[in-house]
Image 1 (cartoon, rainbow, N blue to C red):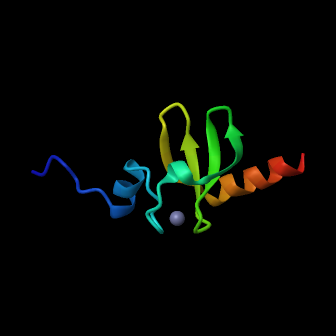
Image 2: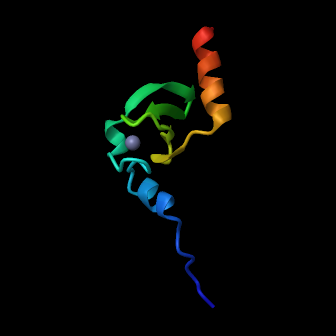
Length: 76
Ligand SMILES: [Zn+2]
């Protein structure tokens, strides 16, 4: 039995904090603003949006709902 499942390529890139689209380092991505106390929305130069988890220091793709949540928070 295989103990380790091979990760999808996108996850490997995110583990390395690289954009899955253009492989630019996500540390250089532009911060759009806080989504929650511990997470912020960042946008890569290729327009892909990511959630930066500040506690875990991890990146993942932003969901459509999170993008909407952020857009709503701008209007307040
Ligand atoms: Zn990118």
